[in-house]
Length: 208
Image (cartoon, rainbow, N blue to C red):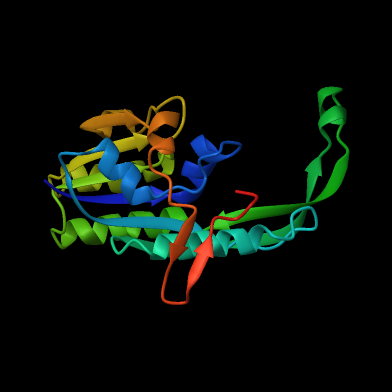
């Protein structure tokens, strides 16, 4: 069946990649491994560029190297949102638990645009009849309405590859099938340590 995959990059990362040795992930290999009977013509990967931080000045460079790795797979399209960083006042946890309020100034970073971009492309591809099966790699309940429209308005089959331990109660009734993304599947879908693109040869970052 004609299949397109829509990956919420940050949901995938925080759901099953952070703190593991599997971050050098080939998403297309992961999806073809989990869905061997599906004809996957495109994987849309939604994320945002991160910036260097004082405690991790190389993280932006590592992400850019990963984008180069994704770019070596012709079936993968990267769709970028953005980060919004600003100072806000948040309640101090210790004071809050003691029944008091004490405001603390913190730097808050929010990823913007990925869920809207995913929903937009999912709906446009359904409208264009670009797939029979839409597979969503996310557990974000904010995607409930666009997924519902793709299933009920356009009559498409919905699959979820769940990167988290539990499936969202909002998404579960909308899926024709659900598969968990487990460590074994991630381990079997890693990029080689050395890759080459139009710029030249590059390697998996040492801290990856």
